[in-house]
Length: 170
Image 1 (cartoon, rainbow, N blue to C red):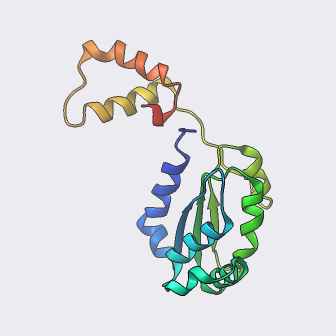
Image 2: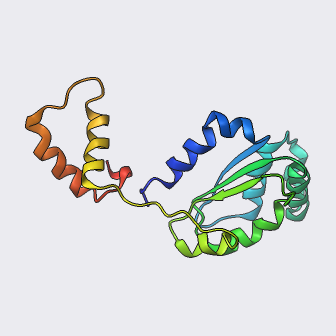
Image 3: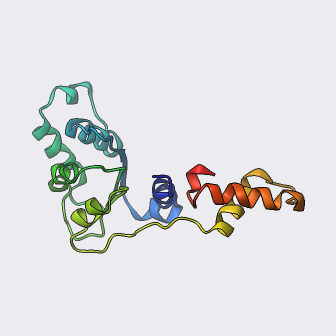
C-alpha cells in the first residue's frame, strides 16, 4: 500500500469534468473483513435519500434498491481498497449495465483482484516514484512557498530514497 491508488482515484472522482459527466457518484471504502450489507448501505447513502426503514431490509432488498437507484443513470462507483474477489462477486450484479457510460472503479493492492474484476479491460497498475520524483514531492510539501536550501539537498534525497518511492511514506 501507499503507492497512491486512493489518492489518484479521489482526484479523478472529485474532478469537475467527472462530477459533471456522471449523474450519480458513490465512494465506498471496503475493509479487509467486508460486510455486503455495509457496502450496499454505503452506496445507497451516496445515491439516494434513505429512511430509517432501510436498515430493516434484507440484503437482497438492499441490492435491489441499489440496482433501481442506478438503473438508467450514468453512474460512477468507486470501490476503494478491495481485498477479496468475493467482495466484487457479491457486488457486481448490483450494478446495471445500461451501456450508457457508467463505470465502476476499484482499487486494490492485489493485482489478482483487479484482473478478476476487469475481465473486459486491462487493470491500471500504479508504479512507485523515482528518487527524483520522491524528492520533488517531499520538497514541495516541506518548502511550500520558499526556495529549497542547497544544504538540505543531500539529506533530503536520502530521506526520499529511504521511502522507497511510496508517496504515503513521504
